[in-house]
Image 1 (cartoon, one colour):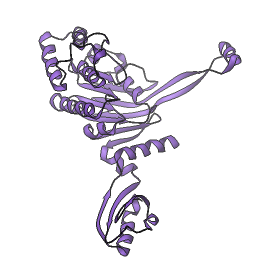
Image 2: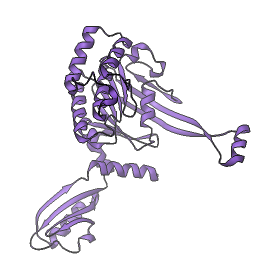
Image 3: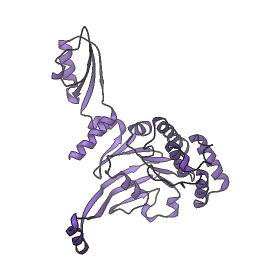
Image 4: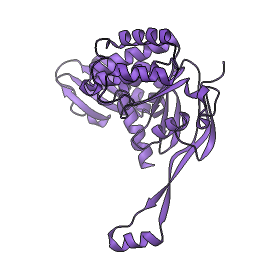
Length: 328
């Protein structure tokens, strides 16, 4: 089966006007305009197979949304090629546009003052969907998202979580094979996030919908994605299993120690960074390569009732990756 997405050396550079301050700068700009080039995406290559749910991670301004826009055909790349669903996306052929959907958490595709049901009918006309198929799909999706009683309510009266559910229903009405999601749970509470995660997982399992997801909420990524792409400053710096991020970028381990007797030793900071100390228990952050050495030294000097060695939370590892990319 051919790949769902094949991106080869995609790059996007914008030419940005440099406006000078002050009256003199404004007058000067009338006669001699100065520009600078900003590279939003630089030589990005990856492949996504049918049925995958892939997380696309990166700090603000890293190039995630620009990449999604190129893959959906909204903008042209400066260089590079891509095949999405067997088509070149920026040729914008009808056969391509009928097979994918793009949902951006900060953009609305539904009419603000109309009930969502009216916008759904408009989508039926746009995609020329048979009435029976449309109604069956709509009933299935409204039941899945639990919003069957809200479709006749004006969109502006819905909560943020309810609106996002309606946006996803609208995107799935024409039964796309590929779903591109840009921050679908932004601003939502934990309950709404979990509901949307569950519905997306079910769409993937029952319909085989391939999903490429960008999100700053690591709960979304951990709940849905086995594989992630990490982009920073327009360049792809990681493509692999979610668990592999900690192995590649996690520089430390968290040790939880329970000592026999009274309080934990006072000199623990000689082994690493003490993050918590309470009675006989303590938590210690140690460089990944020194874990065995530190445990051996502690066991030689103290009696330990319990020891656990854990990776730091994934969001902390990702934050360090982004910070390192920014410093570089």
